[in-house]
Image (tube, rainbow, N blue to C red; front, side, top):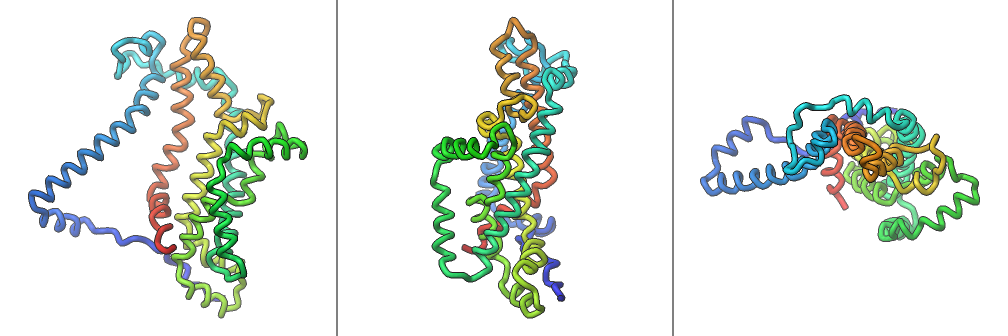
Length: 309
């Protein structure tokens, strides 16, 4: 079966540097004023978003006296870089990280990507009776608040004997996510149907077309789904708090919360606030690096999902 048409993915045309320079030379003074105003607003917004992160990192290298000094110290001298090591070892964060990544985030990410892509492919590339009606029901589930499902799900998982295991956190991800199904469906609709028709002529079935033609073209959208799911699992606090009650199965969010409680014990436990900021900085770093190195794929996946409705 020949499928050479799968080597290119849809993308927006990017202006070249010389083209951008020519565009700038054609600007009038009013255009320059608009551009300067636009970038000034963007810079102000960027600084306002980055300021809390800077305060978190700077507080991580302070001692208690520096943290509670008024007016605040923006550039602490001296810096206590050992706070990162000491804070990480103040709780069993190595175990919490293993539980978060290996036992929760990675299985949940795999389950969401596989199930959501299968359902989205069915809704976008295969004609079957009631498809649009059922897709409408899937979208309608987005309007149901997650809080109303907490008690029924807890009762179900308790009757199944899944409490104090990672099954209640991971298994639901293998049944798809309505938002990600919608996201992937929009991306799949942007891929020409002629590719599927050509693969059909070559003798491919739907599963082969999906795995060998469509999914390779949908890498940006799949990356978005994977990153969002991983971030949700990485930051999830409520789910582990409800279903996991033994410390050996705690995740990072629960460990950070216990360290946060130490902030209210100042006087009994020194460096609680710097330790909390140090651990918060460390657990934020992987998500920041993942977005930094995958930002092109991430932004491309977001932008291309709205090509066709």
